[in-house]
Image (cartoon, rainbow, N blue to C red; front, side, top):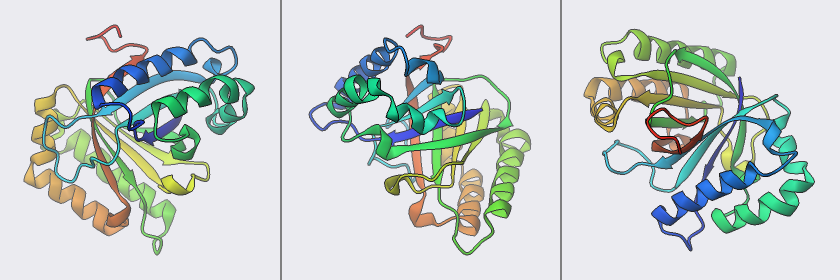
Length: 235
């Protein structure tokens, strides 16, 4: 599946709680459009989650969205629609700190561990070391993530694991190669996984070996809103 993934800051006029509600309204507005809505198959709004300490997690961003695409070309074509210019862009600027186009990646999903969507997850935005072979880096990271999350000693804490390869040239502010998703059934499992010494050592070792650590972002999240809805909340 192709996905559009963005990592955004809220309009500073809003508190975090106000932003969460305003973001849902933005999604509802998309649902009223005739030409934009058909580009997407899924919406998963991931609000920053600060209630559990996740070492290294950023506080610089307020939300990420995982948007399923009907086709690869939809990822950026949607921004050329007149409805985006006339309807969605003004609402974006009222909701976020800037246009969503400037912080959006178009990616291709690879599932490392099958499982359903849950309420809590950690996203990692990775930039590979420029001196390495990108294809080898992708394959190596995906293999390590699959082994760790599917077969490793802490795999029971992980209910779903995904890598998303960036497949279109990214905007300057989002120059990443891979976005990973690690899903957890509850906040306690996220916290245990994020703070486990062995897990952290494995992830840090992979980042240091394959990526530019200074350009890696870890984002701990709680799902704010989704379509289709999560089973535990119809919103």
